[in-house]
Length: 232
Image (cartoon, rainbow, N blue to C red; front, top):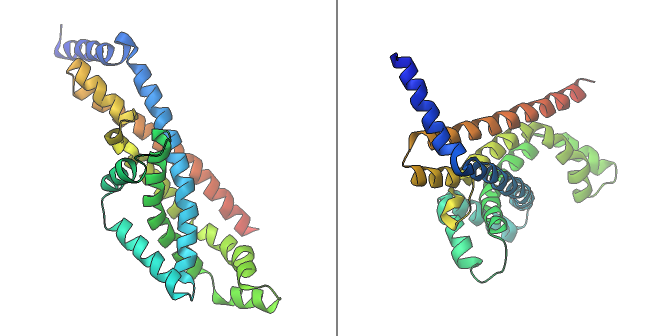
């Protein structure tokens, strides 16, 4: 056998051992489900928190601005893995919730600090004349913000929000610290069971890449649709 044939035979043997034998691929399939549902719930929580914090930071209320500033400063200044462990082992230690929901809350709280700055920048990018026009039409501050400013800001911040979602999916690779079997944890389990470090790591990398590539293409189509509506 040539060198290439030997390499291919060894590759096939390792692939079978890591993913086919004992149905180990099912761990990765299950891990994909965990990663997706944690990321989806986290991004929803992050957007809700980010919106509230952004509005607080833009308000004239000194207390709200102070709370928003402290939250953003603390979350952005501490590691996400530390926040995850504090929320799971301390804050929600006695709360009867599924692990993935607690993990989603932790990642949502982390994401909210970054989303708030994205939303704040998007709102500030809308010409102030739009606010003045809304007020001149008889709308109050809340109506002007929700009906005129935010709809325009969404188109400006959409690409940055998409990027935050992509980053969030990769950040969830640390949920194994709280015992969740996500993609990365499944790969680690296979690595420990087979004593083959390369193939499981390669497999998890490919899965993450495919997930993020699909998400990127999907969000790009949505962004293109938004741009077409601007051109009309």
